[in-house]
Image (cartoon, rainbow, N blue to C red; front, side, top):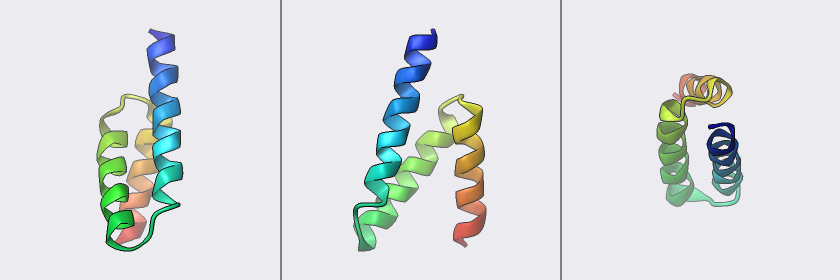
Length: 58
């Protein structure tokens, strides 16, 4: 199980890196997709980060 969780964390980290490389509407869409994924990932650190991003984005 730890391997799957570690792999999911890696994918989330890379997904967030992608969010910061794209601009405009594509970037907004990427951030929305990422926060949605992070909220469901079952990794507390990413869940907390997604909540903070959502709270501060408005």
